[in-house]
Length: 153
Image 1: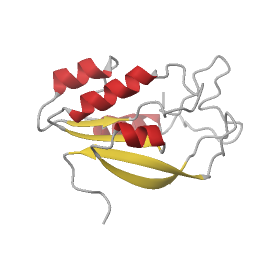
Image 2 (image 1 turned 45 degrees about the vertical axis):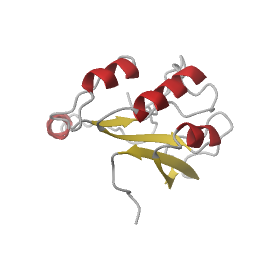
Image 3 (image 1 turned 180 degrees about the vertical axis):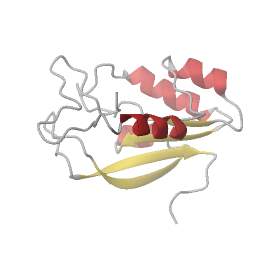
């Protein structure tokens, strides 16, 4: 599932009344190209602190895209305040490089005040939910990083 998957009982992620996403004649080439693109990538499903501490080395690159802070019930498995603080603490002590994407919030800026924070404008591609502005609307997002050169000039 995608990061934006709607995992509620009424999930409609990947469903369209328009053109079909998968064409049987192209499935094999899609699988081959996906296999090549993800060769050498590891995906884990476990507590972030356990994973980061076990895998941390100077050559390790961590990319984290945790649930956005303070957006309510958008996620089936959200983080509690203690988890957000724990993630910031663990990230502050690692040897490897990390890049973390979050929504722009004063709390996030405070938690990661020790890291380089780059605000970037992005357009969400997911449909409007929970009273937020919908797909195509510009939003400010934060990239927090450590042991990186700045991404912006």
